[in-house]
Image 1 (cartoon, rainbow, N blue to C red):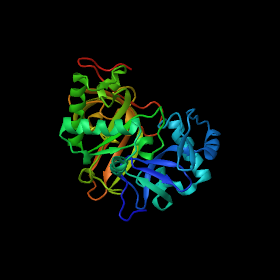
Image 2 (image 1 turned 45 degrees about the vertical axis):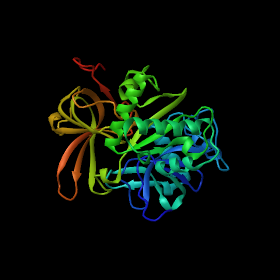
Image 3 (image 1 turned 90 degrees about the vertical axis):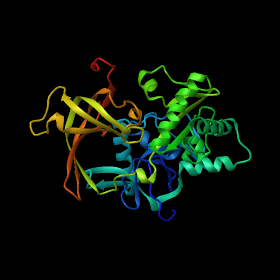
Amino acid sequence: MREGYLPRDGDIIVAREGLVFYAFGYEHPPGRAFAFLKYVPEHLAERLAERQVDFLPLRWRYEDITLLRPKELFSPSVWRATLDFLRAELPDYVFYCPFLGKEMISIPLEHASRVLVPSECLKTLRARRARDRLQEAALELVELLSSASGVPEEDFGLHGSLAMGMHGPWSDVDLVVYGSKAFRAVQAAVRRLAEEGELELETGDPLEARRGLRGRFKGIRFVYTAVRKPNEIRWAYGSRAYFPLGQAELVCQVVGDEEAMFRPAIYRVTGCEALGSWGDDWPKPSQISVVACMVGLYRNAAKAGDKVRVRGTLERVVELATGREQYQVVVGSGRAGEFLKPCPRGREPSG
């Protein structure tokens, strides 16, 4: 493991047993990375399948390991099954976090055989002499987006199976843009390029059309997401404690989307109104100031001025150094049925 390495969201961590994890978020325990499991060696997949986890009918080959991928990566049932599997098979990969008050999937960095950082993966691909069609398309797309947005190519990265060199005919180009300002510039360029016919954006699903993160370039599917630059990481592990109060449903007004492109996606909200029952010992809905979405589906899903309907876990968040408190609703806390639904202009979102 490289000296001084600090995990950032989306870094690929290959464990010594061959499991492939993706780092999640930016608040990581010392010497560890909170993560989710994305690929599983074939012989271990059988044990995970015993816990009712279904796998895609595909195989990836990374170095000398055959990998399978669960059909669902972020559902509460798969998360619980994965946690149970790791607790039984690899207990070092389960970590009780006192600041969250629960067990989490967390990889000891000393158990990592390799860490793949998206920015470095793009540099590695650029240095290759022999490249296939998908690799060429990835580099052409980065060049196009960089030129159209004014964002230097150094602020892009490469994700997914293409970054690991194990892509197949079914694979897409999975790009990273570093920094909120760069992301917004690329987002504007992507929409402009779509209008000009240089690429296509997915519009079939209303939420995906709103997000504008997926499309096709020269017939090849692509997706782009955002990762914080180091100076955009505002909180260190252990600086805040989180206390879940219960599951709540509300309608909120989004007043800030400056961090909506990251994971977690952060929306500053105001004017929250409760829907359904409300705990007697909970804060007033009007005291809730943040909606935090842990599920990538809700990145960039709403913007300032939108009303959203939210169901998630109400949390009290305490800054330990100052004692300052705030309340947030977390979408993707591990409970079933959590969501964020943007409201069409002029209407409350339907259930």
